[in-house]
Amino acid sequence: AEVLYEHAIVGYQGETGYMPPKGGFTHLSDDDIKLAVDYMVEQSHAIARREFLSLPMLPRTPELRRVVEAMNQMVEKLKALFQEQAERSERLRDEAYKDSLTGLANRRYFEMQFQVRLGAEDETNSGYLLMIRVRDLAGLNQRLGGQRTDQLLLAVAEVLVREGNILGAGCLLARSRGGDFAMVAPGLVVEEAEQLAMRLEEIALTDPYFKE
Image (cartoon, rainbow, N blue to C red; front, side):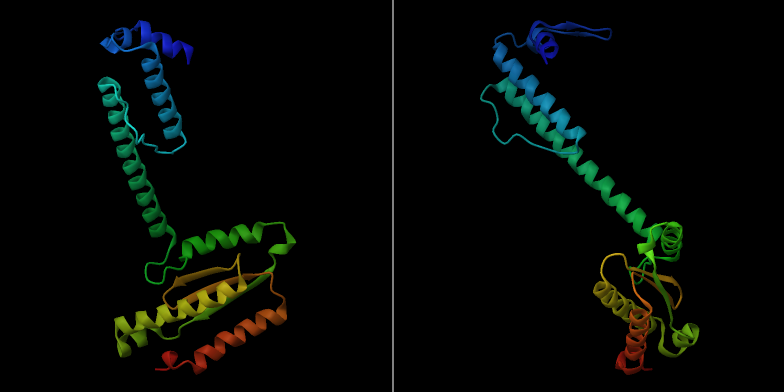
C-alpha cells in the first residue's frame, strides 16, 4: 500500500506513460489521495472475490466524488456482466443435463451420475434402481394428442419428484428418453424398494389422471 500511496502522491513514470502527482489535482491533501487509493484497492479485492460493493456515501471533494462515482458505475457494470454470464452458464447447463419437458435429469446426466455411483467404493452407496415406462407412447400421442401426452409425462415426473422428496438427498430422478423414467434410490433395503415400487404401481392403477 505504501508504494501505491507514494506513486499516487508524488507521481510515477512508467514505461507507457507518466502519472502526475495526485493525478494533477495538487490541491488535494495526502489523506484524500490515500483514501481514494484505499477505496480502489478495496474495490479491486472485492471484485476478485466476485463481491460487487458500491460506496453509498460520496466524498465531498469534487475530484474524489468523480472517482467514486466512476468506480461505482464500473462495479455495477461488472455485476451485471457476471450475472449475465452466470445465467448463461446455468442455461447451458440445463440444456446439457436437463430434460426440457419435465425438468428432470436427462439421459446424459443420468448415465454420468450413475457411473460415478457405481464406481464409488463407499458401501453406503448401495441402493436400488427403478425403471418406470409409459407404455405405447407413440400410440398415446396419436390417441390423446401431443399436449395431453406431455401432460401425462409431466404428471409422472411430479409423482417421482414427490417420492424422491420422501426418500431425501441422494435420490436421482431422470427421464432417459420418451416414456422411460429412472429413479436411483440409495440406501434402501429390499423391503423398502418393494414398497416404493408398489406405491408407484398403485398410483398408476388408481389415479384417474393415468387412466385413458
